[in-house]
Amino acid sequence: MANLKIDLDEDEGKAPVDAASDDTIVVEDTGSKTDIVDEDAGDTDRLPDHAVVNGDGSITLPLLEPVTVRTKKDGRISERKFDSLTFYRLRGVDLQVIQSSPKEKETAVVFARSTRTMQALMDAIFAKLDMADIADGGRVLNHFLTSGRKTGRSSSAG
Figure (spheres, rainbow, N blue to C red):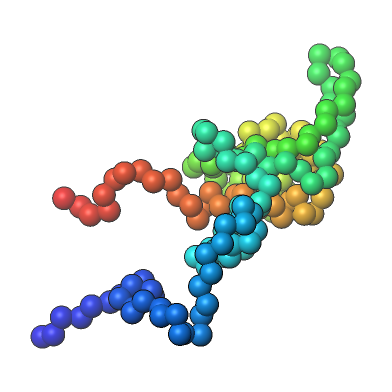
């Protein structure tokens, strides 16, 4: 019986591209991430350009349209301005809470759990969020799902 080899990497094993091919390779450092097209990631996998990856693995997303919410604590009413949201990776307990929430509130619950914000406060913030900020928040959440941390564990059993 012949051995069968399956190559999952489309580029592996291909001959190097020569300068006479249809593709022109230009290496130019423009200093801007927006000039580089990442062919390995779809638009929903890529962090928004203005997102900041923090040392603890969380991601701070500056809002394009800041939101002001009136809150009451200890009998005092105050206005709180949110010009950014910091997202953290979700855990199993978060998934349980998200799955038990009403379908129409599911996205706001995901944002509350990931930003570690009290649900009532996130409901008020989310209601005022610009759609572009909601979409960017979704991209941050999707980034957590598609960019798992490197653990150093081997994938082979043994």
